[in-house]
Length: 456
Image (cartoon, rainbow, N blue to C red):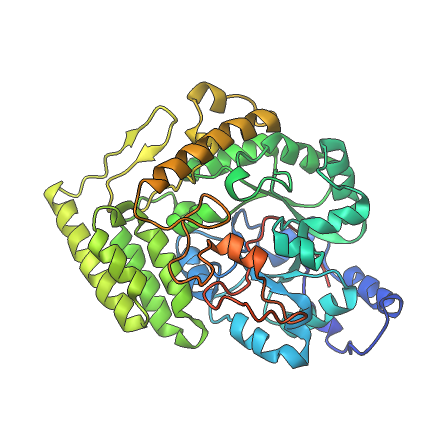
């Protein structure tokens, strides 16, 4: 839930209060804020183009880059409210938190299952953002273990999934509780990892029609034109995009931008804000940006993977950009693209372009993909499972090491030979239970899938 901040509440002291004692403070805080559409229009500038909260990916440098290319509102990565606000875990906040000039409007996302802990964390950032967002959609195993994200639904007796009637009632309950802005992802909790599949715009549409607060839609955005299609279909007030902006940070501008321009701009931002930037962020972003060409220049893929300093990244990027510019020059800098039978555009490899995650609905037959957004889960899962097995079999013929738990490729430095998702689910790093088998490569920061917004 995103929450508007207000200086009137700065005199509130958070002490060792019980949840019951804190309730009047929370109600007063919500009551003093702009509501719903007034909040969205006045505080958020009626933002329609929104960059989603993404763990290790929606950090300050990346937010600044996407804002340059049309993003009107950005979310931080998800922070753990208890750890963020606990003085004994101050290192966590210093390690995770980062912002700077031009980083507004901004919404800070927390996962939480305790109102006191949430308010404590929110008070720390209230003058550095426009709102605080509560994650009610993370479907990962660590969310189940910590009892937050989508697993808070279980308190509502939604054990396996929520049909559309319950989804609407759930949204209306959140609005009644003080939610000022609601983000709907249009997926079931089980749709994660390999089974992510197609978001159901029809569900988003029905939720939008059932509430009187602004709604952001998330899912199925590959190209700029998809934004308006989503707005028209769902009636939502804005569109939130996550993975699509990682491969094409210029998504909301509608521009087709050469990778070298984006990469140079990103590195310049990193140089300007070294104090809030990390090598691990840079590596992940650069791998996604250069994905269209790394299968061609495999030597530089290896070099990028071995880079450990900003200087290393500068060297690899300079070499990659030189090769891409040479390739573009040979083709007279052509921006021509082809479209396959699934409707996916294939631009020359020196341009940022949409990323289609296998298995994905766009790997299905065209006639299947053109069916309603509300296609059955059983059919979708069946086709996806076939694709998973086919992809896994293909990987086994390569020289890449597979994860011990799933068909994904394992991270080369993981001591347990697992992919990130499996490693974090099996060996989560949590302050409440220090595990001696922690993997330092996969620090426990999980992806977020959905959220709602309220004023604090």
